[in-house]
Image (tube, rainbow, N blue to C red; front, side, top):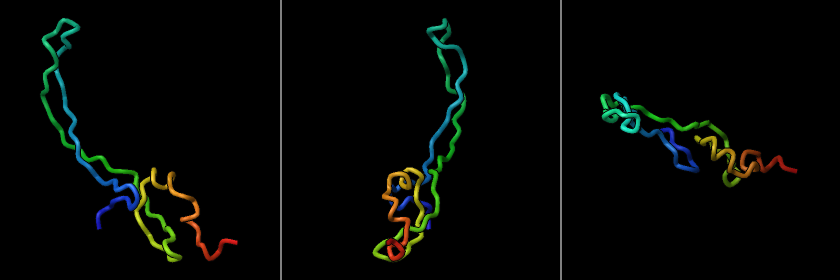
Length: 82
């Protein structure tokens, strides 16, 4: 099963970084030239958490942003609430 946030849908995505060489036109150069491209992956901050859905515990991947945004009562057993 892939690691995807159950709330926000965040998942691993790929981006590129580029190396540039030369000096900027505004500094009197001929401009920056791209000399290399490197692929990399950006991974979300996912954590395994137990949430309570319909009175039953369920272990899911949640991003840190989802953990902050969710109501704190979903992390607590509703049967133990007083």
